[in-house]
Length: 154
Image (cartoon, one colour):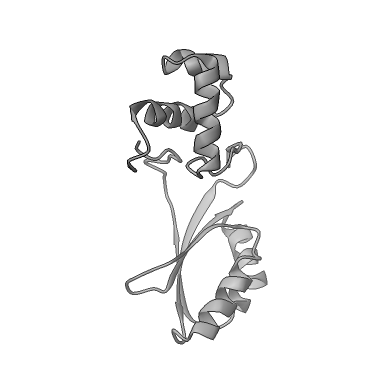
């Protein structure tokens, strides 16, 4: 943690990570602060970028996207122009939840949500097969999610 964060800031962040729709009154009660002091701290945490956004996390199954596919991509080279072109194009693919530049055997790791294997085949044909500079692609289907969270340890 950074020196300008104290235990109360960390408690605020922990509570907000679990329920960002909590009212300021409820939050202030949970962290033992007055509502006005709590509100000021939350505003400061937002302004300083500790709180990047407030979002609604959707249930992938209810949204018809229960299939998680991890795709390792190796490019033809590490030339900066190729990396930039790949990253520009991969950012346009609506089914990709995450794309990470990796150290190791593959250059990139993608996390994709699909309806099923046929839907992934569509995503592959329409988008992945057209990404620039791809030398090799390896797809792995998740059988079961064991741990999934968006909460960082504070």
